[in-house]
Image 1: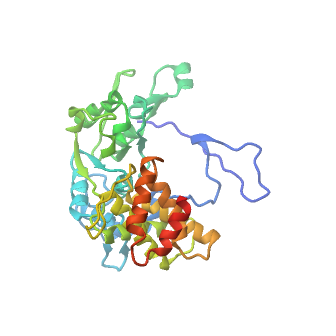
Image 2: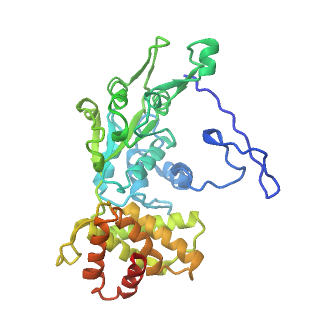
Image 3: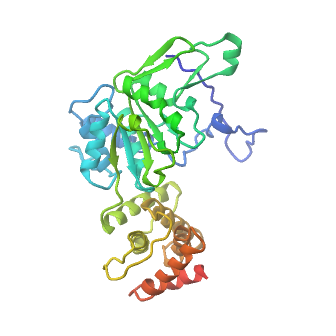
Length: 392
């Protein structure tokens, strides 16, 4: 299958080099020599993937870059015989990762399900990076996602000039994955309209994508598979049909089981994000990270960590991803407007924004939590004062 070529322009660099017009949209080219703000997984962890490939002597499914064992090691972390340290990308039950990887080694698609903030997108990206070496074959699901995003579209200039042809066809990421034996991703599957969702049924069951305008079809080659994500909070938005759900093996990603695991996840991601933003490392900030995680877990679970006090839960999810965002924002405040040390005042405003989504009900819940739990807790007086200040 031929894929239409795109032309990339290069932008000049330096303070004096200001182009008369700046490109916008999907065709915009990165500034020459500029480092991406967030590299794709296969680029950010290229050295780990290369080391794993060199050490990997186990059988690999067709067109896989690594064996299932190496893919699981890439996600869960470990140390290779040559001393290379593979950093964990996912902190959670090993069996969950093993089932997900094994599913991709079959002809059944994988559905990662869980509440918002349980690293579904993160796991999806790293799985495709390790399996196919390319995590960019992505369909982002929204209420406005058209059928063409999953099947194919047309270059209308070519279509009007020459009629339907392969040259006029614009393949979707899923079509490309089928033709090249790679893994495609569909994010937020349950946000896509039901009739568009069902476009996947033939693709996943018959491994074929018909092109009736040309009287042709694209058959998936060995190595093709698909990872979709959906969150539990979207049940009832666009529920999957039973026919489509049967095409997936569903793996539920849980919230971190223990406070220690959640603190480790938040610390690791904040460190990675902080390095990409040139923020200083703050080893002293682990106490504030632990405090943020404690607040989120208690309000999320509706009970204090000692089990003595029942709490009302706010309307937000208070996920691990939101904790990462709060701590990263606090780290930026400490770096740019403080002494570089993460303190209660740096995270207080972020916590308030995460907890109080409903200005009426959530604010009452937050005030009760401050007065009945935070105020009385040893070592939390500075945090209590900071939260009272931003809540006033």
